[in-house]
Image 1 (cartoon, rainbow, N blue to C red):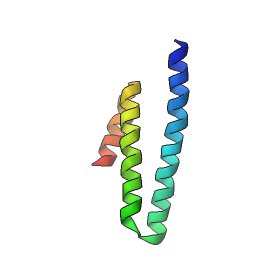
Image 2 (cartoon, one colour; image 1 turned 90 degrees about the vertical axis):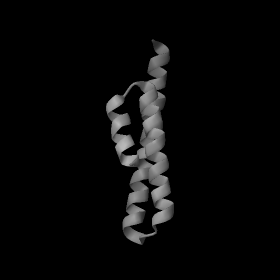
Image 3 (cartoon, rainbow, N blue to C red; image 1 turned 135 degrees about the vertical axis):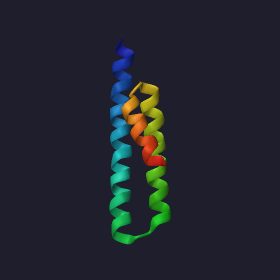
Image 4 (cartoon, rainbow, N blue to C red; image 1 turned 180 degrees about the horizontal axis):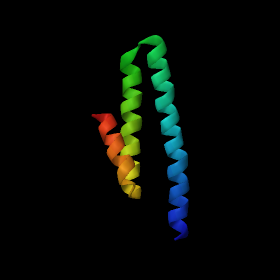
Length: 70
């Protein structure tokens, strides 16, 4: 059970980092209109969050991020 707590903490930290990267990319995209790099950042972050969420059993987040990828 302690292992799961550790994994949840890692998930929370890593998810926050990916969400921040997505937020930064969206702001940059809005300000500069440079799309390729920012779209790639958004896609990679969503893809990683999808995989992490599926692994942790967070189906709703995995489904949301899958839709974001599409």
